[in-house]
Each structure stands twice: as structure tokens, then as C-alpha cells.
Image (cartoon, rainbow, N blue to C red; front, side):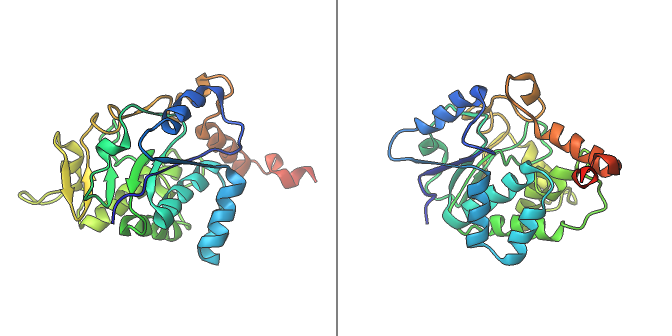
Length: 252
């Protein structure tokens, strides 16, 4: 099975930030038969409702931040249909025809911190087990002791920490392993392409930077006109959770 030639992106509404539009155009302009698909918040909710279990849909609706719903959807839509997922603030510099290996079931890169596997852009065939593992982990982590304003809350529940754990789980790797055994951290630190069980992992700065650039990223969004960061949304949600007077029902 090959990775389908479909590019998926999402934003809360069809009115996307001006700073993101050149990035999105770089994906729309990918040549040689690639299809471009964009979904807003209403459309991704309908997709989860129609294609996943009631339990998954209910959890999706209860997620407190839009970025968490976008995380859920990216795993879900590629699990269902396959293709390439890319955040709207990423710039496609090299065609997916180059980095989507013909024999690959999943193509991922390494975050610039070398702590996580990247999930702001990745490619997959439909039904890949890592995506199912990621969705299952989201269900498992619905109950957590982390407060919503904890800096790792999103990363742990739906984001790159969860994604990295799903990849590690599929490959049977620990974060660190005894001498002589390959660990997840050793893969993250490699300078060459690594592959196993139909997964292709590009080293730092080859796929996630050179082939696809993250133009703004969450920590820089607030510095762009009409951009808002999910980090800011998280801070506001944390404030509401800590202060009952700030909750919407307090105004009733």
C-alpha cells in the first residue's frame, strides 16, 4: 500500500491568518497529481462523528482546546484516508514525491529539540498501526493529573509527547535502553535516515526544516498580525479553571 497523494490541513475557520496563506499556497501548488484538502472546525467534528466511535467522538467534543481537537483529527484523518498532514504555518520546500518513500507506510521527522518525533508534518498510508496507537493513547490519557495550565498538558494528552510514545510503542523501543540496544533517543539523535517496520524517520533538519519548514510555530504565532497561539488559549483556559468567576456559566 502506498501513501495516498492527498495533503490535509485544518484551521478553526475558513478565514485563515494572512501570514499562513503563503505557507498554505506552497502545499496547494505541489505538482504531479497531489490533491489538497482543507477542513475547518465544524468539518473536523463532523468527520470524527461520522467515522469514529461514540466514545471517541464524545471525548473529542469535550477537549478543552482547539489544538487538541486538531491533534486528534490529524491522526484520525490519516488513519482513515492516508496522505500528508501539515500545519498551516508550514512551508513545503521539497515535493512530497521526493520524501514520501515508495515502500514507506509512515514518514516522520525529528523536532528541533530532538526530544520528540515531529507531528506538525507527517505522512502515512491509511490504517497505519501507529495512528491507531495514537488515538488509543488519547483515550487512555483523558484522565490525567496534569492541570490544563501545565506546560506539558497538551503535549502529553494529544501532542508530540503522545505521538512519540505511539511511535516508540509500535517499534518496541524505550526512551533509553541498555548498552548495545537501540533506544528511541538514539533514533532521535541519528544523522542518517532510519527505517524499520515500514517507518521512515528522517534525521534533524533533513525532513522537518529542509523539506518542510515550520514558519511560525506556536511560540511565535502571537507576534504575527491576526495570529493567535494555542499557548495563549491554554493560559486563558487555565485561568478560567483556577477562577470560577471567569467561567462562562458564572455570567448566567
